[in-house]
Length: 473
Image 1 (cartoon, one colour):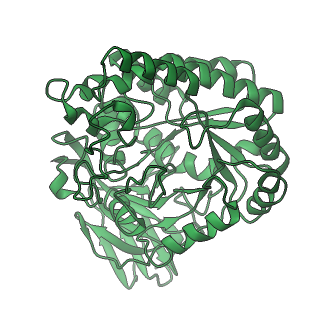
Image 2 (cartoon, one colour; image 1 turned 45 degrees about the vertical axis):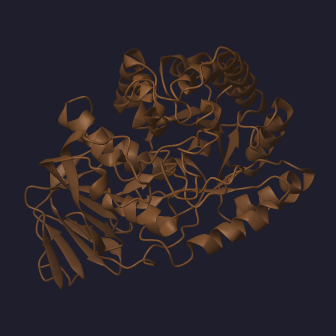
């Protein structure tokens, strides 16, 4: 008989990034303390017969309670965003502490912590966003924050209020190399997008659909290559985030064949949506519900993304959850008077933190496109390694946090807005049929969601300081 445990999960099939086997898991003081053929004598037992026992999902790319330059209100704060994440099988999320131009990076981080304090259902850790790389930021604030455990940060190659020019990108990359931080890059060519936007508007093509034309895959391909070239010059690993199709993917493969450390992430919208969704019912404003950057592409792009998910081009599958209201009484949702005049004013982003795992499980595992082990790697283990959380997170090993999601691989369900827990008033995946669903989410040994019902109180989640990325090992 095993030593007493607080909790035993019994009878399930454990699935890791490399193996699957039948065993029980014993948990004490929030950590995994035993994995054995049979564990008895626990104070609480969960019968996982017929279920898959997986590491809790880690969504490494979410936007919560983030300021916007135009006054648009983000639909999720830390309470609703992490509640939604937990309901979707996640135990850790990584949102962005964004520097506002003209502000101290350290002050922005402190303000973001204040928003999260006592509000979270899941654990959280913050990436940084560098929008104003002043000598003070690059010489003092950013190095100090990296040493304090903020070991990844994002830079943008587009958006008027966020874009960095090439000289600034190279300076930021140099700091990342020196301080051993991982750079995340939003790779879209700013000038190309502005040119295409102006041309489309001159032609009267202002409906939401034309967002996909303005943010052309060529602009993403060019920026991806430029980011890779900057990384090569400065000898620093980079993570190209939310890759949408074949063209940018081939740039990443090109770099890897030459020995460069280029990592890549993709998202549900690039396997479940296409640019035709932006047409709405008949090129109407309903298409705004699907506006995000980069936008969904075409069927060939979807096929390419599946190739990359299988062959290892993509190491991380994140949601890029960026939730806005479609309608709201203040007129600051996607459907607002200015957005009606041109696609360029439609808030960029879609909700997806709760549906990320079910979509990939259903479309990938249930349909035989990827293995369960690959699913675990993409959604939990690899994010933990690349963002300095492993093996505390992303692993079912003795000593790790008991962050566990139980999956029913045969359960069928339909994604409906009325059943979701996010703050947005719609889901772009409405009506999508799903096979395979998370039925229990456990954070550090405590059940936080069971059968779609949130049973924990906010504040159970904690901030996680991170170590160095495996990309820098």
